[in-house]
Image (cartoon, rainbow, N blue to C red; front, side, top):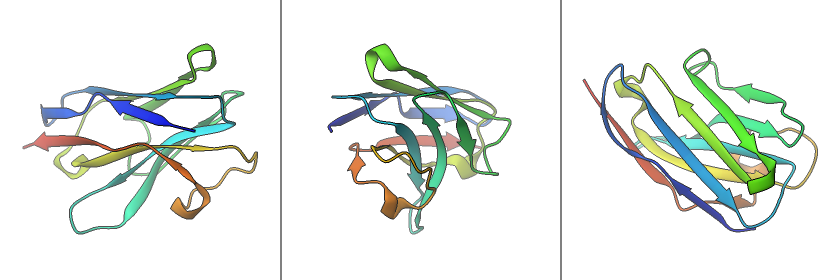
Length: 119
């Protein structure tokens, strides 16, 4: 499965960005991880093909993940952005139907897109 992410950029605190990730084929789970400089790669959000979603506590209420199964594409709408949201955001996919939040469960990764939030 090949993943192509887009939509990162520079935004002021309180602003919004929308990330997109197109997959070459359908998978059960699509989602996002992020990695800030010098830190671990952490779970952000996932969505299943049936529409079930999960979010990291740090983004609940601010980020919304959605999916267009016909296009094999997932979106991450990020609102009320904070400087601590600054990171490289990675799109992920997983064929297996067990929901997992650890990075090691995902064997398909996009190239990463940088999101920078200025204060």
